[in-house]
Image 1 (cartoon, rainbow, N blue to C red):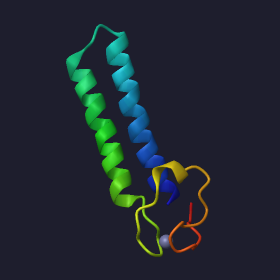
Image 2 (cartoon, protein in one colour):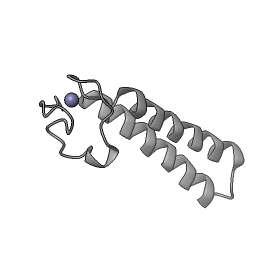
Image 3 (tube, helix red, strand yellow):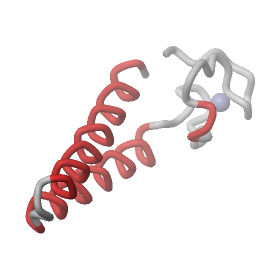
Length: 79
Ligand SMILES: [Zn+2]
């Protein structure tokens, strides 16, 4: 679970970084498109893999930081 969170966060972070850079440096369309695509991949990644390991339900995004127990089955999430 820890790796999934890390990979997803890195993807979203890198994508946003590219977006910000492309806005700051003279609006490079290719860079901003790449940024958006990477952010989307990050979200899709979470959508597929951010699940409870016990009941396999999708976990809420807002509980990502510090979530220790699944809100659905109350089992411990291995983060
Ligand atoms: Zn669960």
